Length: 293
Length: 293
Image (cartoon, rainbow over all chains, first blue to last red; front, side, top):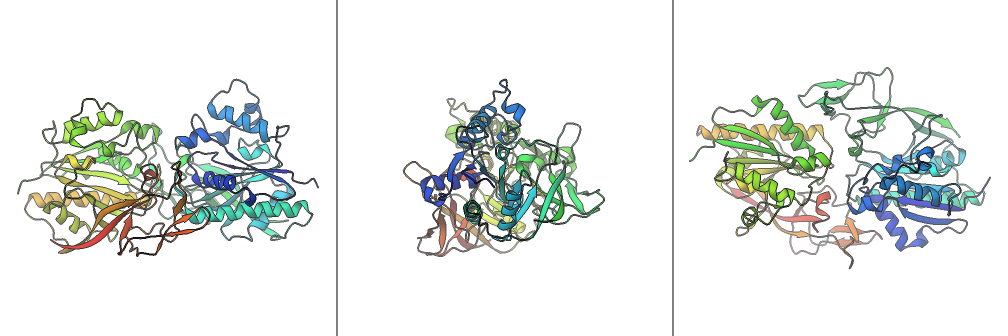
């Protein structure tokens, strides 16, 4: 087992997600909160220019800029493409301050609770996630990739790490309760890693519930691409709740219900995330599995 | 009593408040929904360029551009200053399509329910508001000006009219339940005006509760202007609820409570509105009065 030597905590990968930004500012004012004796803890605002203008991004979504071929492509010159290269060259493998573990702090207008999004299923990540579910009942474990697909997300710069996705909270708003819960999770992660370095990891549950993202569903749209329906009121804020075939998922502006046409029970997440309208995503569909670790 | 001859319904005065924008689009697809025999109903997207970029405004807040001296000032040339002049020259007094009644559709990240914001207390506005409180228990009447102060808001282009402020909903998000409730209120207003034109206004309550805005409270800030605290969890989403002196209103990032230091019970609104961080407003303080009409 190799020890964790450096952890980087990133807030503001999206400039309008204030929870992570103000948490990073707090840690920079009070670094003792994130210092642990067996590793170094660093902080970073991922997209400072987007934060300055109160938007998710300047040119393009920073959290989709971390595919290896894009990081190595000198022709990509958007602000975020450049920022991704700087982050990777700093904290990535062979980086000047190579990190072993990354915590990327996000918030969502969807009711994501305290979601731990894992970029891979290595044992440290899974055991950590299992432990975090014992800290707060709002913790959910979301596994967002298929086995063969490279991820373009910031957390892919390290083998170990996770993205925290907390909500529901509006963009450009601080919710004090979520702020405190996010801080508690970050500090619990650091404590866990400190114990891990000592070969003394605290126990989590032996069986964890993992939500695997399997597809996305877009809003119904017309030929111009304009949306024709809204998330159904019965589904709004029902992230991680079971959705059965035949249950309504959309309501058209004229009041007609549109139902889920899958053939088994699924668990939608990122329901009505503001930033996903432009991505063609009304919700992400997950399947629930129970994993022994 | 002069009759209402033309009503204008405005959505998207702020480009990231989708409820009004999609409601106006619906009315433009189905104009029969807003047609009434005794008056003409028109619709308008107030700030189309801001909507196109998913922001509240391009250069400056359109809903603060309607002071008479600003509308008459040829040196003001921001996009919104020009847009305000066009709106006023079209629908204002002496406008090419002078309107008698304006409905301006807004949404808020604060828990504003279905707020009817009145720009003045003339009898038609008050009787209409009294009627609307009988339609939906979430309707609240907010009176936002002092007697001697000119208002810079779009709804000031007409003597009669109101601003609808619905929430809580995140910016750039559609909430289906709020969309339907907003539509119901707009159609109830049009029905009321049609009955009013026939001298047959439906009765509302004889006594109404009116919340008068008396001051605003900013976030605690440091010498750089950075906020030092968040809305206290106990106050979040508690718009229109009584707040007593000594009750907590803010929580610093370090966890210290800051209490309300007024000397009587008040009723905060616009608590944690995303767009008001930059305006130096954490909440608006109102006093409640009961008015016989």
